[in-house]
Image (cartoon, rainbow, N blue to C red; front, side):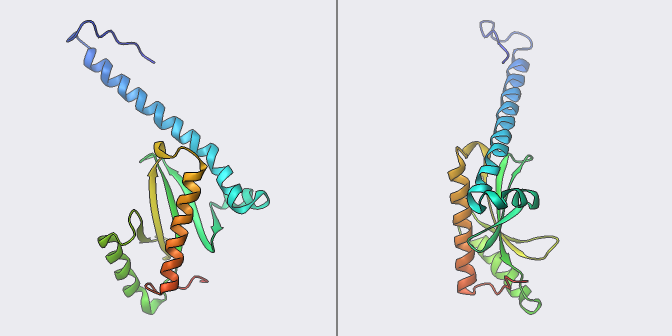
Length: 168
């Protein structure tokens, strides 16, 4: 870490050095949180799916938890860990109604911290949330967040608030 002499306030370059020190510190924190997530992800997946299926789940990118497909990833642009849970595929005749309900739930924050959307390639509805990586101290935070997300999705499916086909 860079040492800055604060005994000469207002000296030329001092503010530049402080700014650079702050930037360097922020970059070091971001790198450390990315590294911590990369170490954590295999442990979380193995804990959820077991050692035999962990490699396949990591290669595939998603895995099953509580009868839902979930994905966990680090977003380097936001330095957040993002959690995704498949809700299902709305049937063609019910898409507009399903999308309207999802938009209303987002607007009203029906499920605090969870946003609903549509996967751009598959057209499947997805529930998602994110936590800044510096706030994730251990594996438990990720596991509990995934469990919370799958619980909300199961409640949505069971209530039929959004008509989706989970087998498609």
